Length: 222
Image (cartoon, rainbow, N blue to C red; front, side, top):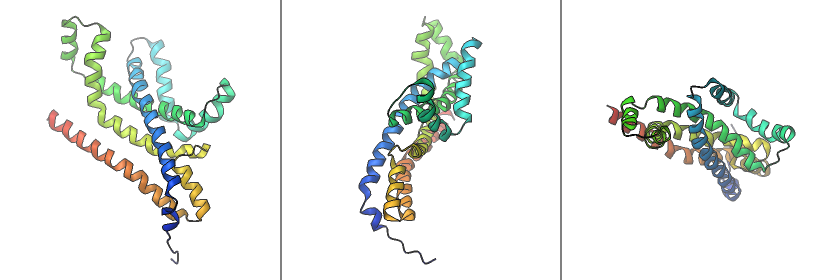
């Protein structure tokens, strides 16, 4: 291989990459805010005793879990404005697409954690005279959230990585800026290698935190 590496062409132009990283983090944090809150609501609705409530929520969850995130992003950007006459900014559309996708996966994580809440705790809440809403707020939510933290963090990392897909609809995130820089410098190997290292630098500490929390949870359970 006679290829001559030149990383200086990238390191001299890190500004656009960091600007793109800021957009990526904005997408990730906002999508996680949606995924954490909406996911819990969906989990409760999935466990509803009424089939008319469960069915549409199940369809929503399964649609976002069983279709590619790229298709969902493109659908939001092109189909929502055409079908519903709703025109939002590109970043907002990206946040909604990623947030709904994350909410579907978080809903299953929450549901598993909710079903794992010991019956004794719920009985204690009933004995104390707590209403169903109070039992959800003070017993179910804290217990389920603690149990599902490793999965929620893992899902959050996945969304951080999948946010690169919004570059295809011209959202100026890290991947979009990397593609632009690679085109300008004619150095795709160096540019995308640096972009991969940036993604890794953000993701790796979170994965280590997930491993630590999971080991701690297992140690407490044991």
